[in-house]
Structure formats: structure tokens, C-alpha cells
Amino acid sequence: MRERLSSVRYRYMLGMVVDATGSGMYVPMSLLYFHHVTGLPLTQVGVIMTTASVIGLVSNPVAGVLIDRFGARTILIGTYVLRAAAFCVYPFVHNGVAMFAVVLPVALGDTSYPPAIQSFVAEIVRGTERDKLLALQRSLRNAGLGVGGLLAGAALALDTSGFYVVVIGAALGYVAAAALLGTIRSGTAEQPPGTRVSRKGGYRMVARNRPFLGLTLLNIPTAFGYMVLSVALPVYLTRELDAPVSLVGFVYAVNTVGIAVLQVPVSRVLVRYRRTRAVALGAAVFALSFTTFAVLGSVSTGAALIAGVFAATAMFTAGELLHGAMASALVAQAAPEETRGRHLAVYQLSWAVPIALAPTVLTALLSWTPTGMWLLLAAGAAGAATGVLRLERTLPQGAVHPVPPRAEPALTTTGPSRKAA
Image (cartoon, one colour):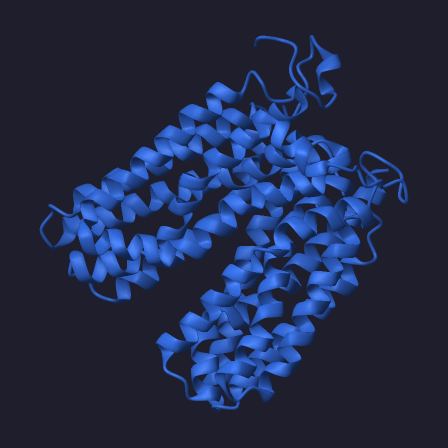
């Protein structure tokens, strides 16, 4: 069994690295790519991509049903193939209509991917192995994204035709990831392959699962917090704090390198404790980071400001280390097996909606009151931390405890807690 699990982990992580490398080549260049090949203004390109992303949200509930009906691996591979096919058409796009026609299937695949990959992990590993695999995934994906960015930069440095190298490279990455993950048979953790059933009325079951809906709603303010690094922080640093543009790159490097290097060792420690406590602590550290960024607005430029920015970024990274992998494992285990796809599809909306709205909401708040934006984000994260702790008693004990309590082995089963502890 150990050899089998080791082989599964190796193929899974290799697939994640290939996936992340391809994504890292394209994601930072997406706006520039279509601006280059179509000649459209960047603002119009942004509107088209945002519109496709919002429409793509409709695939989320559909993906949940399909995962429960056909299994996570089938849908996961489908998301890769769909996006790879669209990327292969990118070089032939020369106007706004054609652009929308190719970015929409990518948006559909992007939105369907998270519940599929989370369900897939839940099917192939269990217990602390799930936490460890998710931690390793976050670490290696950050490294893969960095490598992909470097490859894209090298391709574009040679010639403008490097844009086409970028999109074809991303397509090849998706195809390779699909091939690697397709060799892993799902159902090794909790049920044999081929026993997947589709439960009718699945979304009604999700609606009646109040603890799970609570986790979903509480994740929304935290998800908005995750978006500050790419949306709000660069503007805040350069416009409100008059920091040099180069500082933005260093701050991003602190975060990505920190996750890549520290996620695995941090998660090895966290699996000894309740997942809810780690998730709540991560949200609380986010709140502390956002409060620090708010205070920096009153700090004069100089060494104190730079030190404060890096301290706040380090706290943000620590919050991500505590929250990220443990939250994924908590939610995957809290979702009932029969309707896991639909449960995780609903949970994914707590990420997809903030991702779609963050550019508009955060920039509007920045324009209105930068300090208020940070304090609002801090209050949201603190509220999420408190809420998760209050939910702990109602969540399945198998979700709360990576390692079942020794004195109560019966609590390893998935289901509502019958114990007020």
C-alpha cells in the first residue's frame, strides 16, 4: 500500500508541476497577449476577459453534478483538454469576437477545475496524507508558477513571436498534466473505483448542510484577503505610500518563495492539531497583516516604511501557510462522499465570486479610503476566524481532526458531530 501511495503521490505532484509551469507561462501575460495579437486596448481586453470569467461561473454547479456522476478524474481531465484545445486556437484570434469565443471555454475550464481537483485529492488519499499532499501541492505549484514565468520572460525576450510560444507551451502543459493524472485510478482512499453514484437532489442536500454552508460563507472575506497581493497591494504601495515600483516585485517574491519553501514543513506540524484551529489562526494572522498595512499609511517614507511592508507581507505569508492547505483539507473532508462534487462546487463559489469581483471592489475601496479598505479586510478576516471556531462543534469530527483522537476512534467517520467538544 505504501509503495502504491508513493507512486500516486509522485505522479500527482509531477502533474501539478507541469500544470503550474504551463499556467505560469501564460497567466501573467494574458492581457498583454491579446493586446498584442488583436491590437485592442488593454481596457477592452480586460472587459472581455472579465465577462468571460463571470459567465464561466455557470459551469461551477454543473461541474459538481458531473463530478458526482462520472467521478472527479474524468471531469478533471476534461478541464485540461478543454483549456488546451482553446489555447491551440489562440494564435488565430485577431478581433474581440474571436477572443471572447476562445477565452470563454478557458473560463469554463478554470471554474470547473477547483472542485474537480479537490474531489480528486479526496478520492486518492485520506487523513493526514491528504493534508500533506495538499501542502506539497501548494509548495510545488508556487515553484512551477515561478519557473513558468521565467520561461515566458525568456521566450518574449527573444522575439515577439514568443507570445505564441507562451500559449502553445501552456497548452502542452495542460495536455501533459492530463496524461499524468489520467494514470491515477481514483477511489483508492474511500471507495473502490467504479462505485460512484449520482445522488438526486444533491444541491438540496448541500442547502440543508448548515455547517458546510457556514464554512463556505466564512471563506468569502478570507478569499477577498487573498486577492490583495495581486490587486490592491501594488497600487497601495506605489500610489498611497510612494514606494518604488521595484518593491512590488520583492514583496511578491517574499510571498511565493515563502510558500514554496515553508508550506510542507509547516503542514507537517499542523497535522497534529485540529484543522479548524489552523484555519482560524491563519485568518487571524491575515487580519493582523491587514491592520499593519493600514498603519503603514501614517508612516513616513524610509527604512521604517520598507521594514513595515516586509513585516506585513511576512505576516500575510504566514497566514497563507496556516490557512491554505488546511482549509482545503477541512472542506474536502467535511463534504459527504455521495455529493462531494456538488458540495465542493458550492464551496468554490466562495473563491470564484471574490476573484471576479475583487478588481472592482478593492480598487473602488482604495480610491475611497485606503485605510478603510485594510481595516474592512481585517475585520472580515477576524470575523471568519471567530466563525470557524464556533462551527467546530458542528462539523464532522473526521474533518476537524487530521488524526482521530486516540480515546475516541469512532469519530473517524464522516458525519455530524454528536459530541459537544
